Image 1 (cartoon, rainbow, N blue to C red):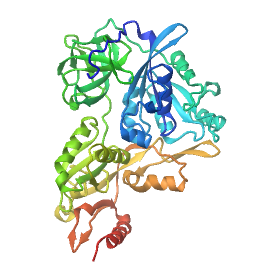
Image 2 (cartoon, helix red, strand yellow; image 1 turned 45 degrees about the vertical axis):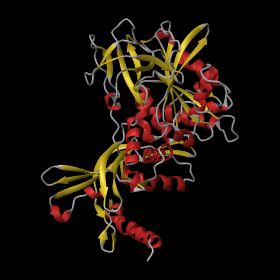
Image 3 (cartoon, one colour; image 1 turned 180 degrees about the vertical axis):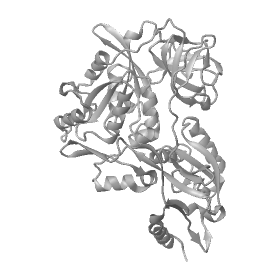
Image 4 (cartoon, rainbow, N blue to C red; image 1 turned 60 degrees about the horizontal axis):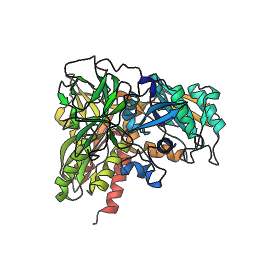
Length: 519
């Protein structure tokens, strides 16, 4: 693309035995992006300059918040014992809201580095990501980071990891990603312990699409793992999912920017560009093959399901079209956000958006305001409730405005259910050392998307961490709380909640309105 006439890299000499595909999984702030920087420096992909910090975190919001939102890849060339290796690092997010990014990135790997802060120890996403990697049969390399900090307790953390994950005591690697101490040993362990991919370049092309993004100049960029065969410029390929045919205009690797190659071969990870115009054509988990050589498709990924819904409105009604364009641009690269138009009597025209979680929602809002200079109003987040009628039909309620009117429906409502989250077994707790315990419980998701996380952090002085997953629906005594001003309901202040919370929440809103509205 903008790299123009640069010479293409020849990867023909890197057969599957010379390729390693791995990821780094960690809890937030345990040093994953810093370790990635050091690995890229050691292999000469980037120079040791301050401006190259967090080079895989390309979004401004990622650098500001210290989180990874979009999975990225970086290819490195490394020599060990006289043999050259092509090492592909597939970066992964650490926050639970973006766990779908982790699962699809791990599908392109044969192993992973489990990075744990030697001072903080095991956290919720450490446990969740370990079992995600373990369930996919990946080789896991345990690494303790920040061992040079005054509060580091590597022996204690190693015991935690032995108790929680049954790692052998002699398997741990102690490093400091910030200073670079022992970091090259990570590369050596990746080469020695992570198995090479299994594939045959002489077979027909069989490639897995595990990520994509939109580029203004080239259209959709598809990130792929080549399992069998090879792909090069000029190849005519087909999607096994949609049956649509494309002609490849460019292939390459990310190192860390886009670097063109003559071809990509079995076992390698890279990108291709074709005449794909919409991100909706890039179905994550899809199989691409040559037009006249069909292959058996891969089992598709589970598509991310929005679990938090909120109304989004422009602060200034004159910015409606500007905000609409901004939402369209952001959703080009984030197919997990659902968008439906919504009208509020109080706030005017807007949208009802679905997100993976509250952090996902907040990141989306921040990107709208900072990257597109649009000020927005977001309504109180809600979760999808399920209403079952006596005739057996079910309705999914994503907004208080859609909540059924019992007066109109009479007694046709059989039950109302709310989604629950859980992690692991029901109501279990496991002590991993004298000061740390893993608690598993089922909770209404409406509690988690409001103030549960803040209360958890407050009561634990910031030490507790949280991970969750969908646990289905359960019947509950849910009602729609309406707020009236001058005897007129204000739809923007309506909310669905458990009956026991109505009076407390209603009084709280009334008190705040009293302080805000001039008499």
